[in-house]
Image 1: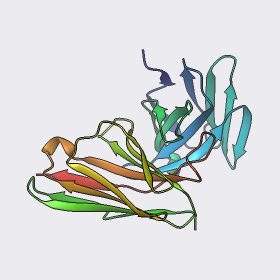
Image 2: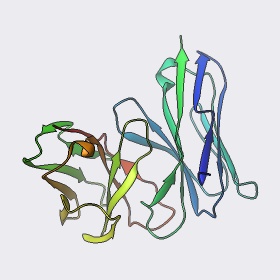
Image 3: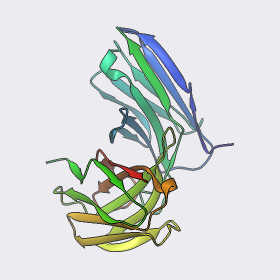
Image 4: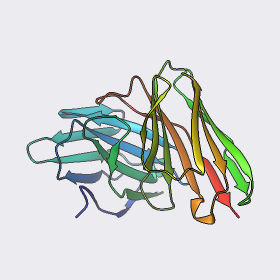
Length: 110
Length: 114
């Protein structure tokens, strides 16, 4: 079993829909990251969370430390949101040593 | 400037070639990282530099040789690569490399080894 599990693996939505991507982890963490990767491209760090909730524009990320679960929400989705969304956790030691989920591929249709 | 710049964006090389990947940041970050990402897989950490010193080498073959000439620059020297080394190579940086910092990623170098 992977230490970081994401669901769903693939998600297709219509423009304007509310989207939720889930991440569960089985290890103790110091922080959880939500990352966005467009096809063939680099990675953008969307959020880093250790507790509670963060909001940036149409994106909201929440984390429940007790339940070892995080969600990424996208409100009023748009085709430009189409990307792979990756959940990753950092456990201590070097920050770069992240445990990555397998990603959720999101396609938003106009 | 909140960018991590990687060059080249694409690289095709033969198995006998020697090439280098370059990564640059001007955010004053003191930790820099190399990741390798195969298609449809998550990134895998290769190397970590902290304050210009190699702090983590994730058992990477010696045909990959990292170098950190100064706090803004990170290179990855490639020699005698194999076709299975074809991948997206991502560079990242963070303020000091301790837990709890945001990572800034570059857009990657897509490497093809023929």
